[in-house]
Structures are given as C-alpha cells and as structure tokens.
Image 1 (cartoon, helix red, strand yellow):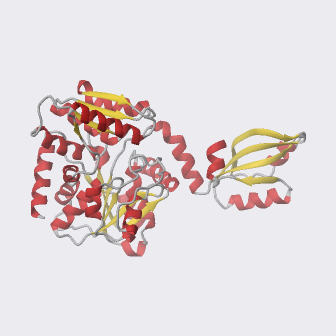
Image 2: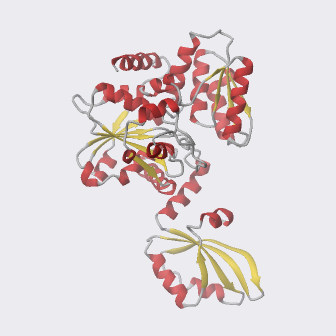
Image 3: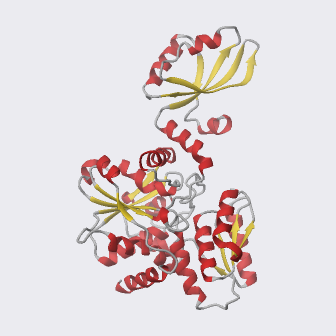
Length: 418
C-alpha cells in the first residue's frame, strides 16, 4: 500500500504544473446546521470546475511516455471528463478527439472547445452515450489512438486519489476525519480516495452517495458483482452511470451496501438552491450529492464528528435553474399540479380563485381540452408558502364539489403535460 501512496504523491506533484491544489474549507453554515465539524473539499474550483482533470492528467502524462508523438488521444464524454481531457491535451500540446452525443447541449460543446483550443476536435455522433462511445472506440482502433477512460483504469484512480492526498495535507495537525462522504458515478473518485485513506491507516468510515435514479454501486454491492442498470435517470448527469467500473468495483466491493446512500433527484435540487442562496456556491447536481446526503445521517450519530465531503463539480448551466427550482418546490410539497374538470360558465374562475388562501398562488393555468360542451380539462399549478396549506385546499375543493386529480407525483402524466 505504501507504493500506492508514493504513486499518488508523484501524480499530485506533477499536477502542480497544471493547477494548484483545491481548498479544503470548514463550512460554518453546514457545521451549525448538523452539529458536526464539516469540511468541504472544493473540487468545483479546479480550472475545469471538477475533479475529472486529475485522472485525465495522470493517465495522459503516463501514456505520452509510451506512444509516438503523433498519437491521437480519444475520449467519449458529454460532461466533465471531456473538459478535463481537453484541458490536459492543450497543456501537453497533443491532439485530442472528443466524441459527444448529437444531443449534447451547445454550452458543454463550447466549454470543451474553449478548454482544448486548437488541440481538440469534437465529433458529434449518435443520440445516446452508448452509440457515441462505440464510435470513439472504432475511431481509436482505426487510427491507432489512445482511449482515455473516464473512470475504469488504475491510472485514472491514482489521479483521482490526489484529492485524498491533498485532504490529508490540508487538515489541521492531528485531525483525522471520522467520516468521509464521496459522490459515486463510475467509481473512480471513490476508489482512489478509499484506497489512499486505507493506506494511511485512518479509522475513517465512508458513505458513498449516488443519485436515486442511477444506483449502480448499491445494486452491485447487493448482488456481490457488477450490475448493469437497465435504465438511469440522467438528471444528475455527472453521476448517472449505468455500470460501475470493473477496477473500481474491485476496490469498493470491500464496503457494506449499508454505506451507500441514494439521494432523490428532486431533494438534491433543494440542496443546490440552498447552497446557492445561503453560501453563494454554484454546484452541479453531482457536486451537491455529498452535501445532500447529510440529511440522511442521524444527527445523534454525527454530532461533534469531523466529516469531510467532496464537492465534485460546479459545471452548472443556469438555463437549468428553473427546472431545479421547480423540482425542489415539488419535493418540499410547496408546489402541486392538478387537472380540474372546469365548468364552462361565467363566474367559474372567480369561484375557484375565492377558495385560495393568502399564501396560495396560481403558477400555471392552461386549458388542455374541452372534454364536453359544458366542461373543460384545465391544468392548474399552485405554489404555496407552507405545505400544510394543500390539505386545507383539498378540503375546500371537495366541499365545493370540484372534480380534479393531483398529478404532481404521476411521473408519466407530469412529464407529458407539465
């Protein structure tokens, strides 16, 4: 294990030519809120606003020594891995080809191109990542290119472990974390950090945080082998991985499945909004995973403990902010959607509005169709300041004889008409 510590130390030292260490900050707000000593490792403050640059740098710096100067580096990614890859290719002055799905938002394409400059070529292939990844592999094979994996390689794992090396150096003298919260997608970061902490001999426990819609580590630990998920929710795009890396699972399979926390996507949105409003910290969904998981830890079990959280990324497209706020309100019970059978007569709307309380607001009102000559189906979105107000409204609606359906938690209907 001492060999691993040495390898990580060398990787970290070499990275300093590219970027300085990210800060480890004690967060007073979260510490007070949860009654613990909470520290944030701010990987959202790397040059590409995520930790992915570490693994890409370590892999490419090693590969350069083994391949011809004309060799092309290749990756498939629509997110943080592509940006870290591009930044490193420019640093070394080596050509890199990034394969992205055709559906990749223009903002991500532009950022990757900006980080890589003249050294990066971007190819848009396929509607989904699997098609894009297959095309990248075919290209690398045909051109003799070097594939740079996002997480499933020991070189990547060693690079990501530099996060732990910095944490160990930055903590106050003699302070050892009793608990570390690590976001998990493909598992490269979690594998590297746990391996390094184990090598140090710290008695630290871990919690591995995944989005509820992409529980690849949880399912794999339950089954005792890697499980490929049939489908994933892509909202937490930085951690929505269908299958954990093979090398990563070899390391993480030593931990109990009870150490995995699956975070609801809509609840996560509340944490993103909270950190933006209270702390002024911009986080992408994956970057907020570890912070959100604090809500699942019994306060009596973490009281007074030193806890380190890895904030994995801050590449947030503010065009997504309305959706994030919407999801947070729905999770907190402050916004609901209804389909009402609305009578087509004068005064009906006024009668409906009179039922609303002073803290209730109509956020959406839309006729879907006239289901009969005298009635129409209306989509109504209502926001309120206190979730308990909806119980009052429900009673008023029933007493007034309104026919309606609450579709807030009906995902099929909500996705179709909201």
